[in-house]
Image (cartoon, rainbow, N blue to C red):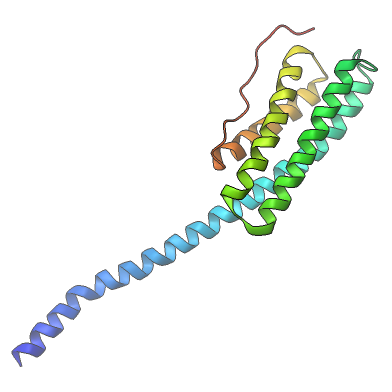
Amino acid sequence: MRKLFVLAAAAALLAPALLNAQEYGHHRWRDRSERLARIDALVRDCENRTDSFKESLRRALDRSRLDGSYREHRLNADARRLEEAMNVVRDAWNHDRDVDRAKRHVRDAIFAGRDIERAMSRFYLRSYIESDWRMLRSELNRLADIFDVSGIEVERSERY
């Protein structure tokens, strides 16, 4: 009888710990699932915003005093490079959802974004392009944080 009592007491003491362990494991899975869903959404949003920015920038440059200049050509090329890099990020991420494997592609996108930031800080473009760039840069920096890559620092310089 005494053994039964000790066994029952031990079971009563261990039951909450076992339930907590199961619950903890469930939360870890749910948190990982939620994290992946947030990364999915951010990658998708960045890729879509990059596509839109590239086209808006092209149209704005065609209507600016930079039209036909080398700087226009470089900015369009940088925007294309950023858009293509984000396509690769999206494809790499959608393929296996591996942060380490997608990291190098995110780094390529950030490098292209830094070139755009340098140019955007030097030349005034229409306010909607400036606003679009600020939003895209913010999303790219969030992506850089998630993938543990240095982001795009805001450049401050004289504008022409």
